[in-house]
Length: 475
Ligand SMILES: Cc1cc2nc3c(=O)[nH]c(=O)nc-3n(C[C@H](O)[C@H](O)[C@H](O)COP(=O)(O)OP(=O)(O)OC[C@H]3O[C@@H](n4cnc5c(N)ncnc54)[C@H](O)[C@@H]3O)c2cc1C
Ligand code: SF4
Image (cartoon, rainbow, N blue to C red; front, side, top):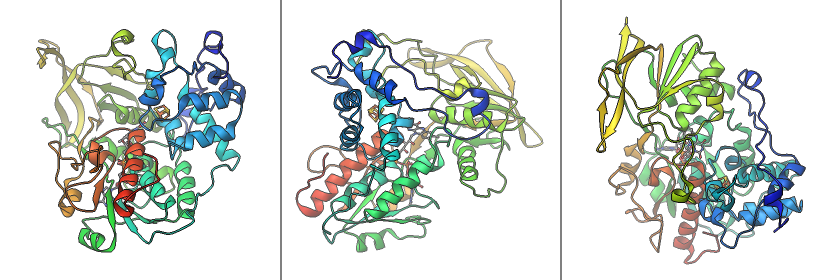
């Protein structure tokens, strides 16, 4: 523990953000990492409690008290070694993780938690600046070949772990670039894509082979993969979006959030995208209050929308949680993202009844307030309203993986249509099909980047054990 009295002396520090008026003019990141002095002070707030609930709250079990202490003593090189021992890609999580570790921080019981995510961000940025992130090339080759289908954070983490213990790893991706939702879902203003490119270079040096434009089940045959490789990991994500079955759904100007977000990321990457739908000078309505909806808000502001309204079906959460009831778990409470701060009108308990069109184009949304009575949604009498809408973005989450990927491998599914595989015991991450494993959103359903990294790492260990009889990889 760095400074015994640090938690009493210093307040939590927020990372500085560029002003809204500047940042909405482009798609660049706008969160600045802490200075050395700020990070030192924030590290000093860690109480190094006997039971580090933060470590359990973090899905990759980052050894948080240790790196907090090392940052307090300004031993940044040791800090990145500790951080990398549990997390392959802290530059991703240090930017876009919702930080369940901070909800679990003991200081959070009666004060503000340690800024763990901001410390993580500062450590990894310093490590890259100092060329401390180098390839870890395996000294020997096992002669075993592993194919990984899907290059999101789960596939990338699994690939890196397996290459480091000497397996020949091929990462197959149906899109033309590697990264999954990190590349084509999450906007650049939350995470610039150069972070993925830099990791790809490291992974390539470690022996990972990337194959893009490989759509398994379409232009790549699943049986051919099973014949060529000793093991296959399915890491295809949960891409099937939830629809809105109301009158007017078919109108022009009503679209899934990903069909709006992906082209913008492609344009930022320098691609030419034909017929990109822009929010410029439009009244935008975003349906769905989660991360995807928030990214639609941030992108619409950068396009120059006339107005942006975001509706959520569930009731407005409380401003603050009752910590005595929920700590150290992730609380349900009001969350305002940086995209919301850039301008949006938000409302909760709203159902969409109809989308109204003129000449085949959406012009308005008819909605109503709802309340929940005995667990059932009931419309509030007389609450119906109509709002102008030239662009309606459906961001109500994702239902399941695309089923075809599971079907071409003949793997059993769970009740929600995910690849069925446990995460515990000798059958960890194994699907019903011999030598086929599953990790990330394809197995657990729509989740978070940090959970995908965890599952990729753990699946890599399970595959290594399957191939070699035992594994030195951490779980
Ligand atoms: C808009 C948006 C914003 C988000 N924001 C955040 C955030 O801020 N923080 C956070 O923690 N999480 C966020 N998430 C969730 C997070 O991105 C996902 O949980 C995470 O990326 C899942 O990782 P994955 O590797 O399992 O799958 P994915 O990232 O979905 O990657 C799966 C990959 O598999 C490929 N694939 C699928 N089928 C095939 C096939 N047949 N052949 C070859 N390749 C295939 C896909 O093209 C894709 O590249 C967000 C999600 C969305 C949609
Ligand atoms: S990965 Fe997420 S949960 Fe884990 S320490 Fe970093 S911010 Fe916290």
